[in-house]
Length: 216
Image (cartoon, rainbow, N blue to C red; front, side):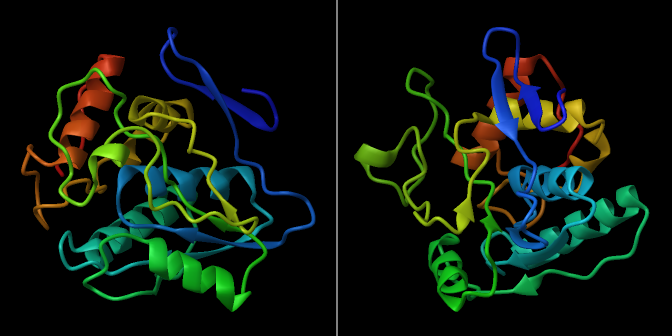
């Protein structure tokens, strides 16, 4: 790992990501849903940018109880960092389908010069997984279609697949942070093992030959 870059992924698919906040920025916003992607993004940004103030946000979706899982992730991150921290600011409504509208509203508020989101690529074509009901055929694979396009929004995980993000936990010796994360969008507790997000998580660990230490 170089000063500003981290190499993640299996030997057959290495990717390089930059998680260092520009020097002229002293405060950033990060969306933390309680899932694996935003959890490790929050932790990595905190570790690699100790002098940057990080304000977190959560869309309190009732479908997967994002509020509870985001709080669990925050508690774990602050414990790992060995410092106190505040709970995420809730933004958007409980019936939001994704973070598109809340992200756009935060961008338009001009509260932050940079807003980080853990959006990434979906499972590529060639793998037999169920379609997520909210996606049409054109967007059922590859780049997630609800990403907000803005100079303010940073998406360092966008070129990554799930196995790259899982590997980042291990690169940063943050495996214990996996346990409180929640990926399922059908159940508020545990896994349905059928939805796209459960399958994607399972696939990611399988690609690395690892066992998922989490429960949901």
